[in-house]
Length: 416
Ligand SMILES: Cc1ncc(COP(=O)(O)O)c(C=O)c1O
Image (cartoon, rainbow, N blue to C red; front, side, top):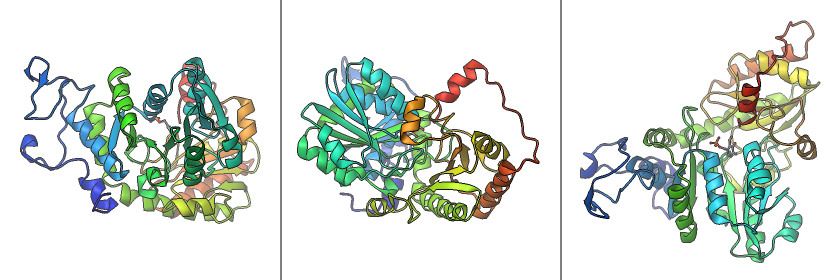
């Protein structure tokens, strides 16, 4: 347990100035791919143990120390993307024949990986709604190696009770690894390892970096065998971030505790405003008392975060008009940056999820997901109000549906 608070650890946790780095106050970007050895097979121990940058790099190590510190974990790992982190965990922590459970409302890429690649690799995969604890406990058995889920899901903003799930799983199988994708909440809001999870991971592309300028994944754990496996994944799968991206994420992360409260305040105000707008059909935001996960999230997390989903009255056409009409809020996948973004889950982040699954979990064509940024909230509300009015009016001559060239379509479905 750190003797400092989150705010201090997030700033000082990864790096300290000393002689070996010329007393630099910020971690230098060490671009070298390789390091001079002291003797055959022996690294120069006076300056660290670096051999080759896929195995370890000082800038990446500063980031890895930082995530371990803020997650209150023994070990931290950086990967080239959130997907690289997820696939490294599954590929190196489970083997052919193992049973793995994944939440049924996860990021589209994660869903696709479990539904296709993990199955091809011989894993016995089940996708479950993990709010149903008795349904989950009926499925966990001594062959279950991993239960992986998001704390707050996308786009339906379901809240999964990490403490209850981890306890229920471990009671049946203490060796089963409970792996949490905490991208949406971040360690500032909650630290899943403190609620009984074995591993926490993030798409650091999102809030942790916070500036929408690089792609990265982070993992933290206090389990030593998981540490060995993930180091193996870095070395043998090789999906590690560059020193420059490691530097960007370390830098972005230092203001996480300042950004997250503002994301929340803005999102809450927008959610409350949307509730009063008669053209809005339904809102999913766990900071509203009317949300079914409100009490669970309040127990686990400092705030409800900055993401919300709503449906606009009408059809896909109204959603498209809305998304074409915002001026400040960009129509784009991704989330967690300082700028507000809006997207259409049905055809963007979840395009690669089957129609049947979308129907089952309730992703509809008039649904819009907002990643609420750090702009002035009244400016954002004005932008949203204006776009809603255009979306439901027949008077505006909207851009016609654009015919998507196949290559673009392929990329769009891979977004988040
Ligand atoms: C919750 C969640 N997990 C994982 C990912 C994958 O992360 P990345 O895009 O950094 O590979 C995403 C991407 O949007 C996400 O939203």
